[in-house]
Length: 578
Image (cartoon, rainbow, N blue to C red; front, side, top):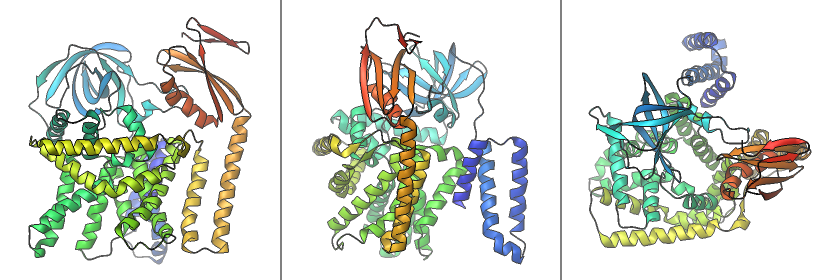
């Protein structure tokens, strides 16, 4: 049913059915629902198909009502705006970013607000007024680039609002419960900023417990990505289980054994309060729902089922907002857990018997790292072999790390200052960050710009699906099936590569008010950039995605003279200053 519901969402997102057809789909779903109450041999035999169709239709209907329709109110205009923030986003080099509700003239709408870092921090307790420049977010020039406009549109955001200075404020007296909670979280983050610790330690603490990476420097984030340790900063199943276990341990330690059931219920309530406090991220929601469903099974003395828990959590999140399905965090969270469920236990059969805690951690870390990396390959076009040794070394200490970080957050939030605890935590995290940085620099074990089309991803997923039967029972039949799918995968991959390598292409890329010229011949590409351009950013945002999209094997960067204004290539003129 969950799969059918998800397919319905995808179908509506691609086909964009109009209101008339949606009414027909709604009537069909209602008819199927009513048929389920009738007793009939035919209905009994076709019930699974009918339920699948009903949930497929439900996905179409809900996604229709969750699709944002754009307006044409403002574009490239200087206006006076009133706004309140709804979420803090990752800062850029020059600006702090927020999601906000904007009022301009008589119109209310959502926007991303940019405020210079030199300005005072804004909060949830005030309304703000400022002169701003409003512009609609533009879609990228080419399909291989990240479509930021579409990403924002899925969050009902169409505008970017740039504010330079002169922000006035007024105290609010209409804060909702959620805004009061988010304000308390913001105040806790500000207290951590004032703690006597190294800046990178403070940012790590905010990320690992409060799910805030808005001020973390790009180098540290890159270290976590390249080393495969970014899951430490994403509040997920490990964090929720550790925090649940910590609270459950304390309750059981100081209460009679007969209150075990109430300790479980209280611990579940606590993790949901924690999820509310840090903001409902997809991985947090998934972990909390799965943990809750698991213990509901336990309390009802029924055998827990991971697939049912995973499906139910996905359904609940998507019923709330179907646009979550297109969030990379949502997809990675569920695909990684599904991959772990599918491959972890079969792979563990081929490791030495896990007769100790450390041995079990090592075996599980290897299989989990492998499973999770497959999900990352399609979205980020990278694969990190260094993640296996990095996780083996660091994951065994993750429980201690999370508990220690949680304790530090509570102490800082309550303004309880123990210098020796701060010193111990600061030293430990700085060693950890140095170790992660060392792993991230092992370039021989890190592969980037890996080409991966949707067709290749589908066939690779089928290969992974067929690995489980093979690992459970190695025989000629299972081995032949896997080998056949691997062969098909490489045939498709080779065909795509040959097709792309036969093309020649010249593109002019717009980047930060300057233009970048790319010339592709076969599997080679040359990027011509201005002398003072930010080469690192061009490689990250233009050259990298282009190479993975066009299956480039050899990349070369060359520079134009500062005075160059136009380029003539194959009889065509390209304007560099446009």
